[in-house]
Image 1 (tube, rainbow, N blue to C red):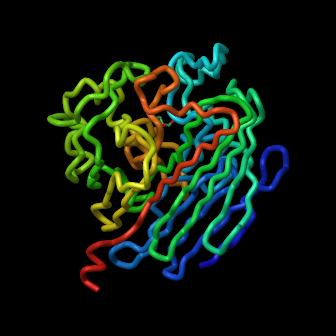
Image 2: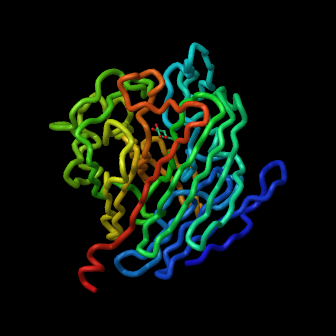
Image 3: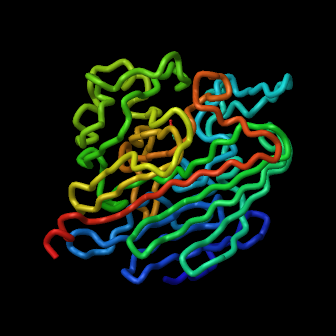
Length: 354
Ligand code: BGC
């Protein structure tokens, strides 16, 4: 195992941004930027043994600051959406930034995602990034201190552990917004990937992508991914919820509360054979099929067009501050938020043939 550090460029205020490269003995690499605690690349050999970068992203600081749809970024203090862009805690009202259609708050307006984080290397298999969000930043209460540890194992698992604590009662909901293309970032759309998600219920939304009622069974709908199926199989089906969001862009309900690390999803690239199993302690996952990617040029100038990447954003459910029936993510002042999500990579055929 090794961790190397390189310069990645400079923030507009002149501060240096670093890229940390984690590499295991098999040659698998994970690249993490101190800009936004961003996962920039995951390099893993495909079924032919060719190194494949399975993440969408950019090559330069400028691109990350001007073209990003949160590619690989750490999102917080509250990922996904908050209806009405306001929250009430303990009798106090907090106005947030209505950065989506002037109505909702999405991904906390990027509060965590475009900041410079500090980094340490506590061990030869991991990098730990830290950020302190000042009281009131983005409208959120409390000075919130966050650590995110990216760790690569010898058996090709990327573990992301989050720790957060605030000086005031507040809602905390962190995620990583990696866009995966397991065939490689330049391989075109992800519709031929197979996907399985271990969820019996999903969260229907209104036209602003805010949950609009009960979580409903996936049974008998295009949202049933309990057995592996191609992402493209039913993405254009005549289903009200798919029309509302232009394709999959929904929370899948995994559990009623945080729990021990549990396997919740698997995806496989149809061209590369690369398989990814996802584990999390969190109760939900947003499956977003990259419907809004609109052709901005990413790594090596390759355009990221509609559905060339998909996200499995582990999370608490969207709009939890307004939904007492959802698993709770209100943390008391001084109370620690903890979660872990693991992305495990393999090429099953290659192992069977070995
Ligand atoms: C949301 C999408 C949004 C994307 C980029 C996802 O988490 O669900 O609707 O387009 O993030 O902001």
